[in-house]
Image (cartoon, rainbow, N blue to C red; front, side):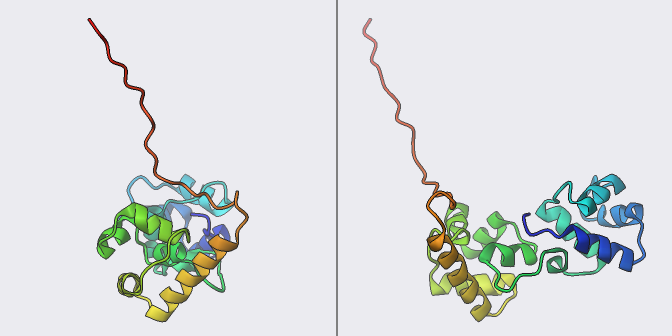
Length: 167
């Protein structure tokens, strides 16, 4: 969760007049095994919460997930998904795509068809124009990055040497 804003969590918690312990207790209804020590580490920026934990904290504070993220001008597709509180695999399933395909789209390594973006807009509860603009932004960012910066992972099968044994 690279866009997590520790200061926002602290600000929202103190604004709601909650102790770390009470926030942990409230969030634990949605995300088990969350303690005041976890909250402290998140607020200090020493630890980054997983998406499910971030969603649980947002619910406990009564805010949207995006409130606990660093503000940005133009969001990429992954950011929209995180704001909606969806995991990558869950969104891919809703779109009827393999997770690997949606992952490449989120990283800007593959373009998405208009129909897929329409379905994504519906699943993310965002206007189509916002999702389409984010897809273009994501793709443009990936294409303009230096070659070593964007990981281009291709699925490969290791070559096995088969040997035959004669008795």
